[in-house]
Length: 322
Image 1 (cartoon, helix red, strand yellow):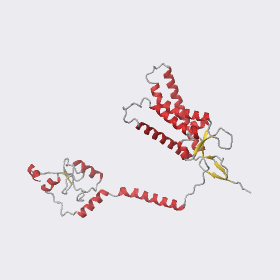
Image 2: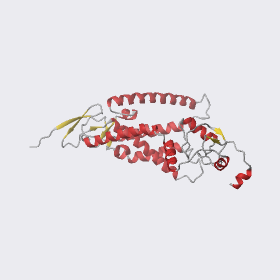
Image 3: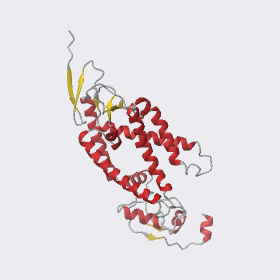
Image 4: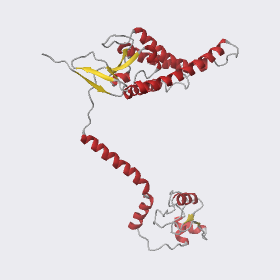
């Protein structure tokens, strides 16, 4: 005797999901996050197809596709619609997440795919709306103020504003109920369901423990690294490996150092010194000393004592000899 039993799983779809063991016709509601992820995947696919298409014309004269861009995008979206919604009742993003559209107007208990009329209206509400939004600025430019085109533009603007408000209200209802994330789905009576029943997700204790430890360690490093003055630490290490006997400044030493800024490595502009044998650009040393009150010379690790201009009384022959 075969015992046919059922169990109930509560998820974030706003209702309970009932599954029957051995029943392939059970309709599984879709999680809110899964429906939103499917939309993101569809948007990324459309952008990828458009970028690949435009690369075919990258060696043509610039601007050739600009005038026909809305029509070309609509044609590419129609191709995607033909091989996804029209043939499988699911978009590419939904197929990747094992989701498909169900005819919610049907009263049958089993899964019912979208009707032909729903698929055609879906293309009109999605592809047609995008085309009209992109093409409408060109349709109504350079038209007389009192013409029918101006009135049509005003009417389309009102309808577009009301549609956006209705879409916002519909999305708020979706967040509460878990159904019909877009106004087109609610208007057409199509609902996203899983293609196959989803099992209960179980996460192991070891995995959770490892994730918690890693995130805690990462947050500790993010907090610790900004507190470390790496520039000063580097200067200190350099001074240990190349110690100097003193920091007596002489004209000959400064003449040799005046060829290179100790910070940017270029010919020093308005050369200044901080009390050591090295020379800096005025803007380099000023910006570093303002940002770090404990700034030290990267060459000898001497902290800033006083920023003052370099004063030399040397002949040009001294530079030529050096």
